[in-house]
Amino acid sequence: MRLIYDKIKAVLGKDFEKILYEEQNGFSAIILLKDREKGFLVCVKKTPITYYAKVMKLDNLMFWNCIYSLEDPRGLFVFAKEVEELVKFIVNKLKLLG
Image (cartoon, rainbow, N blue to C red; front, side, top):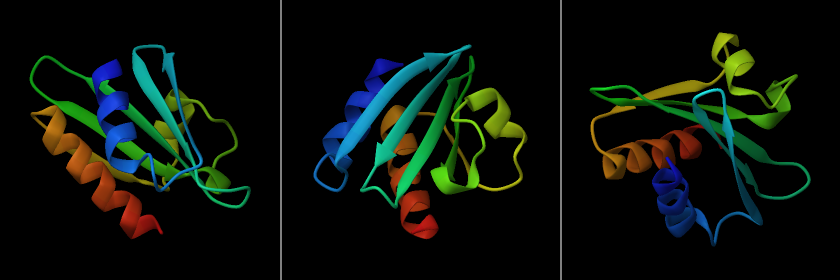
């Protein structure tokens, strides 16, 4: 799953001050920090047939944890069969969330 982080970092590295990665209970948590005011959490999981991810603003979250964040009604889901497609959809969702 580090491949997803590497691809996101390659695409968004210039737009964010820090991009952090952590494995959490089968999810890849990617934290994108733009500045002190703006940041996002992207939780990614791979199933046998697809990838899915949830993109959320950090200011909406009580915990920066993928398990809890999936239950939160705020945020946008992404589904894709390939990593490149997933990264493209994640970038689009980040633009929508602002």
